[in-house]
Length: 338
Ligand code: SAM
Ligand code: SF4
Image (cartoon, rainbow, N blue to C red; front, top):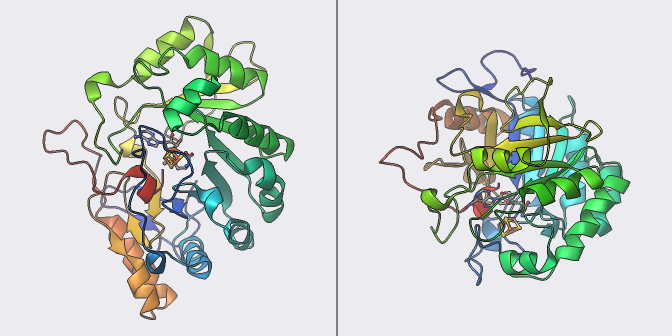
């Protein structure tokens, strides 16, 4: 979407990309321990005084929408449903004009209880992460026996009218790499849209191994063995997923986010805010810009906007995973906001 703010006010980088899609991490904590994300024992969580308060989160979202032309806000984490203030934050963001599109990326635990309230607060869409249709595999992969909670959360989101309900799946070699067709069957049977995400080097344990990664090409081959995938007439825009219509799937799509093997950095329209108030230009950025300090020192909205623009102006052309000098960021995905 084009930025509605005046030229010179938007979040433009030196390659001319305009960031209109804000990812806000609301916490680095989580009630699962997905093996590709966190170690079994969890992580040293951010100290409470470092976390933005609900009012501070709302203030920075307001600056992003009013001063910087952000048109989409996605809440993530860690697990954003663990944040008690989430409905109030969603409601405040929904009251902004121009009203941003509001979405949530969640593991789905607790969504059965909260989907209706979140919709009433103004949430438009939800992505629920689910890597397997098998309860035992889920327990092995996430180290928690909560598969049924995720399924209930998905169903509640659909009943609440959050459309489309999307599923995010990561496939791991030797763990669930045989499940692409089963996940698509499950999604089609329940009217969910499915997106596979290539595993990225963002786990806290630094266990990612490119040679073992399940690639977009492999995932598509496995899907095509069972399904006919038709070209999607909808324009991709800055969306990370390449999508196809599933023949006989009632208009439902399946997508693959080939972050590693098919990078889409040239069209990136993202800016990120961590739960402790740092702006990141990219998931893989090694630099951050501290808005919390400025905000708590009394900066006005224009000063916060100026710092945010400066942080984005230096965004690098690409994530550089294939570059021999690539360094995994010191913050893991759960503390950046996926
Ligand atoms: N806890 C929420 C959830 O799981 O949806 C939100 C945060 S999670 C970090 C956001 C998304 O990132 C999830 O879909 C998850 O599967 C994905 N993710 C986490 N670690 C990843 C990794 N190393 N590579 C690719 N995707 C990853
Ligand atoms: Fe938690 Fe999401 Fe990471 Fe899984 S991927 S451990 S649900 S933050």
